Amino acid sequence: MGRRIHLAVDVGATWTRIALAENEVFTKRVVFRTPREGGRLSVAEGIISFMEREFKTYLPALESVGVGTIGPLDVKRGVVVNTPNLPVGSFELKRPLEEYLGKPVYVINDAVAGAIAEKYYGDGRGLENIVYVTISTGVGGGVIVDGRVLMGKDGNAHEIGHIVVKYDSEVKCGCGGYGHWEAYAGGANIPRLARYIAEKNTSTALNSNVGRRALEGVLEPREIFEAARAGDLFSRLVVDEIVKASVAGFASVINVYDPELISIGGSVFLNNTDLLYEPIVKGVGKSIVNRQPTIKPTLFKEDAVLYGALALAVYKPVVID
Image (cartoon, rainbow, N blue to C red; front, side, top):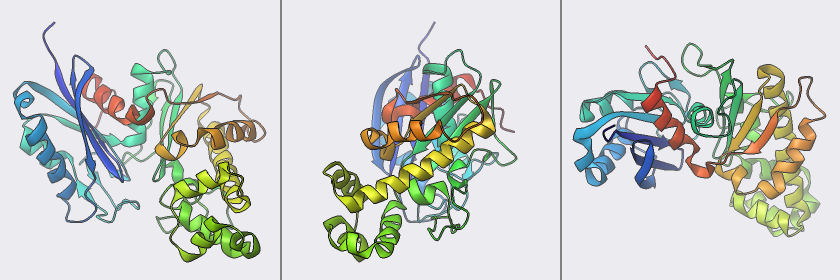
């Protein structure tokens, strides 16, 4: 068999990754900050710039490109629509990339790409019911039921980050709603959650450097987890809320989709498994009616979306027309 060349792209709210695959093995990659400002073509133009700079000699042999991106999506047009986690809001991917490359470009939600990665290359091989959950800047999911990737009318059948985990919540999500899983666990929203908790627990917050920074609105999520490890009481309150919301979210996913495997990725989760993983798994067991599936961190670490984008380009498991 001759050399087969594909490109896989992961468009995240913070970072964009491009990887070159030769016969389904990644041989070269680049990482750059996702453009946050500009028009509808700014993200695609950033991708094209790096393709031109880093992969130009490979492009004549390129077969196709798979893209996993933050959503929500208009999947048929390959357009991201009003994403809550990137100031640019809406941007095109499929059309400008195909015009530049002259090759097919397939675009799906990043967490759907994660589920496809597990199905083709990971712990989901041989399984028919898989959910991939990413807890990163936002919270997202990809779902495979009876071997079929769930898509929905616009490609957004898996926006699990907007499951309401507390119906009377005052905690606001980046999308404008209240009580969503992403409002509690998404990295972009954790500082807002911390400030809300600090305002409700002023004495505890004022006795904590992290709590005071939360009240000032200058807190980073990393600080909360580091302080929680060190025993900071206020930070433990915040982590406990993240865990409780995630238990409700995962329980809903299990009760609705009945998966055999839930694979978890995303930087917020993967960087803090010591604080999140066991409490979530234990809590879920008390909150479900379906048989508990295997729940584990993804083996791909930060590369789950890239592997799913590669499988999308090579195997085309999703029909988008």
